[in-house]
Picture (cartoon, rainbow, N blue to C red):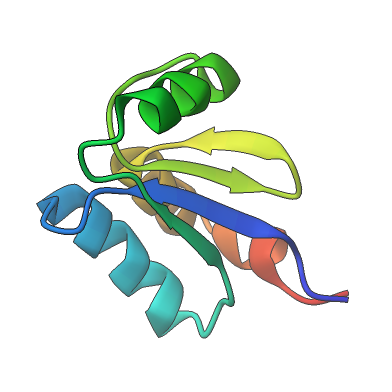
Length: 86
């Protein structure tokens, strides 16, 4: 079963692009919520994530953080286990 990966982004955000690039390199399938200028969607994301910065990433419903957090998980060798199909 594929993990459920969700990422909230802005289309021109360099951190969003970097986070998606890492997921793409890992061949991870994800659902992107591009919320450019949609403050209601950003409020909903912030309520869910506890943060307003972008991107915000969830794996199987668990908030894993933003771009730096995703790259940290990768450097620690933990990301592959989170995004691997079971």
